[in-house]
Amino acid sequence: MNEGHTSDLQMTESRTTDRMTNPSPAAAEPKPGEAMPDGTLYAGRSPDTGKPLYTTPADALMLYTVVGALKYAARLDAHGRLDWRVPTKDELDLLYRNRDALGGFDSSGSFPASWYWSSSQRRDYEGWSQRFTDGGQGFNLKFLHSRLRCVR
Image 1 (spheres, rainbow, N blue to C red):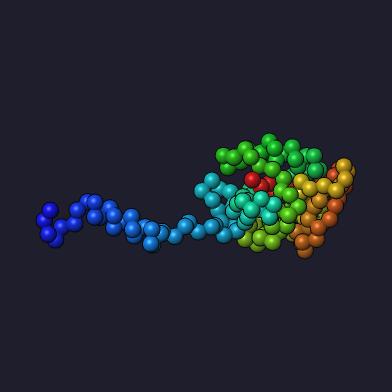
Image 2 (image 1 turned 90 degrees about the horizontal axis):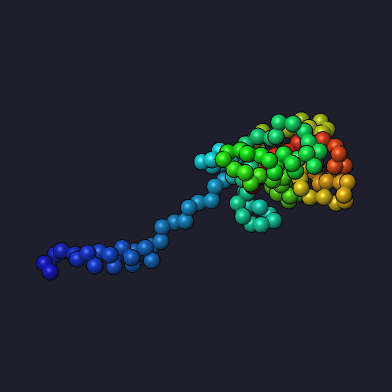
């Protein structure tokens, strides 16, 4: 071996040691409201699962009963995804807390337009919903119509 030249083995050992002592930074977690390559929006981490939660960039076009909302989400084919669902009450609250970054929520204050359904329920005839004017949460009769923002 010539002096002043580094062998391939020495260079490989050097790069390996470098990676171990100076690992590359992990990819930063997106910020709520950040658009993903598939067009969905990062909503934050699900309070229920701790996993990343994504939402559609807009509400469903109509108002739905709870049953209608569940059917709509189960059939939704958007942004190349088929795994959409109605958010749980805690996920819906996460959407509310990040509403400014996510955008597009109805906060007009009118009933039922500014109320959003969750998949949580109290009784067979009551579903959990949240008002996006002030964050108020409560149970509404499932046959009433409210807004829907799907998550995955």
